[in-house]
Image (cartoon, rainbow over all chains, first blue to last red; front, side):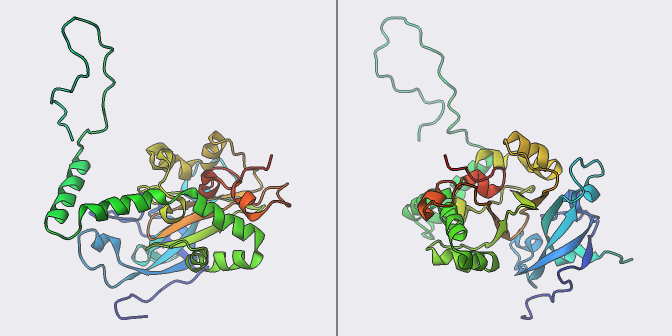
Length: 102
Length: 219
């Protein structure tokens, strides 16, 4: 790990929640997943923060990026498929908090 | 390029009155906001000597040279060589390099379809696509309908592609929102046991590597 990189806070299997926030600018956290709870599937590495890169700023410190798995029927209350169906989404660390925080 | 309102060239004289069929509207050169921006930026970069026109042409040629055949060769190798498949799932970028395919700047994730999991790839935010291994995305992949519905009702979308996934199989959608790119490793079809690696590659369609279809069954 280098100083230009934020330390990873979560590990695979951790229960997390996507922050419910609506900041202005270039955001790569889809609206439909904000506020939802899931489980960390893997840490993908650290990447420049797209919310900064989009405005030609350096994007440092680089943010840990995770793949988080969500159950479809928890995202869409009227989801018609089987309960086991899931969606995996890449989420940057600053959008995640422990599921039972606050 | 001819300006849209410039009189068009005729290959016949116009002495006698005769009826023309109505011209098909030419949409090729509609100058949209982003097209104009691309032209402006490109011309500035060339004018300032940062790049030249041949660099642009070569980049386009290289992009157009990528095709699903590359992805198919990766899948066929994984089907025939279990050790390769293990390496491919563990470190996709290194494994595709073994086949002479350049991984590019994005990190590749390979998603293995199994008897209990069917993977489907979408980018709900824009149109992120594993161009390095599949070439340019199909138009439907970029449509708002696919992007919104693949994550909202994936089984209905799959059915429209002719792909019925039984209820006991988990449908796992992958929303490609950031720095990863996804390649589905479809299941090897029954009846393909005696095929060579290159014959197997022919069963691996673009759509099977996006996850909207299964690999073709050998005829």
